[in-house]
Amino acid sequence: MARHSILDTLHDSLRKDALEGLRAMRFPPGQVLFSAGEHCRGLPLVLDGSIKVQMTGASGHSIVLYRMGADDICTLSIGCLMTGRGYRAEAIVEEEAEAAIIPRGLFDRLMDQSAEFRLGIMESYGRRLDDLMLLVEEVAFHRMDERLAEWLQARAADGQSVLNITHQELAVELGTAREVVSRLLKELERRGQVRLARGRVELTGLRKTASPA
Amino acid sequence: MARHSILDTLHDSLRKDALEGLRAMRFPPGQVLFSAGEHCRGLPLVLDGSIKVQMTGASGHSIVLYRMGADDICTLSIGCLMTGRGYRAEAIVEEEAEAAIIPRGLFDRLMDQSAEFRLGIMESYGRRLDDLMLLVEEVAFHRMDERLAEWLQARAADGQSVLNITHQELAVELGTAREVVSRLLKELERRGQVRLARGRVELTGLRKTASPA
DNA sequence: CTGCCTGTGTGACTTTATCACTGAATCCGG
DNA sequence: CCGGATTCAGTGATAAAGTCACACAGGCAG
Image (cartoon, each protein chain N blue to C red):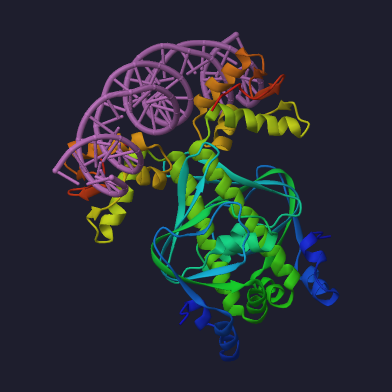
């Protein structure tokens, strides 16, 4: 059953119509929901799981732009839906996910008839713009070692202290090269802040590098 | 008289209401339309001129995110309007601009009553997301010398071959440090692609640096 | 066990960022 | 017109990050 907070805001009859027009689907980790160049067939609602959105540059390098989780809306799709252009990024399932697609016609109807739905869409758009602006700032001005440490710390804050991730995957998270990640991790290990193994990073005592600035 | 294509799409009675609720204002170059932290009082429509939107990082460095010109919509404001959060960026007039602000109430009414208006807003949002994604890719993966050359070339394509701009301003355009721009420009001058003077860059024979990759 | 594939480590070198200055051009008040 | 302040630009030294090339290690399939 498709459960998404933006549907809860709808009035009864409209919600009934909406739920009829949707069917939730499950996607396993690794599944590609859409990739660059593809066209958009509707607005995906993320019901559960975790999906990362990343793009690949001309150089062949990739960078993760943001993640979508339970109750998120794939706002990126709206632009494609409206302008008819293809996606510029790709979406890959990380943790098994459940999603439902709102077809174009239904989307238009919901936008027309529900102020609450519109509000939800606009809020989601605002958040995404914010995410991207922060990312630009981070990529343009922050040091790699700090970004890596912060990324790892964010995971630690989630309660995870052993990450099954390769240096290459970390490099894509940060938009840098694998070698750079390897070297920085090695440095963290020397300082006793992480322990490394093949495909694994264990967080031991991670703290901010004492940097002035 | 407020002329903006998104208003043209409105039906007669609605357009009349809209035009009554708006008053266009002129802003001189250098004028700050909004700055980081400020709250949003409505949706600005750009009628004419050129406005740049830039953000400043914790480091104190700034980067230009995108520009708005005639017939643009300041989509960034919608997110702020909807969530009530303050702006994260600032908008500065470059070429004398004319703009009108759609107050919150009128915006809601237009979104409610005009599918064309909604479409215009969504398209604008899509374009903005696209711009930012491209910017991320560029900042993360492109070499500075190429970015500088491309930026200059884009201006040359506009018909301008003498730019009145300082190295510092160019650095903000690209999100780098002034010294870096100075050195790269000097290198371009050595190759005879530009001629430099205080506050001035004259484009002579600019072409892509013969780079492999 | 033996390849084979994927992941990691590292040296050498280039590009970019940062810091600390110097000097040149312009502006402004008297 | 002069002198001082201010804004711009140039540059050396050094650190951080990206690139290229390659060695080697772990784990899996045959």
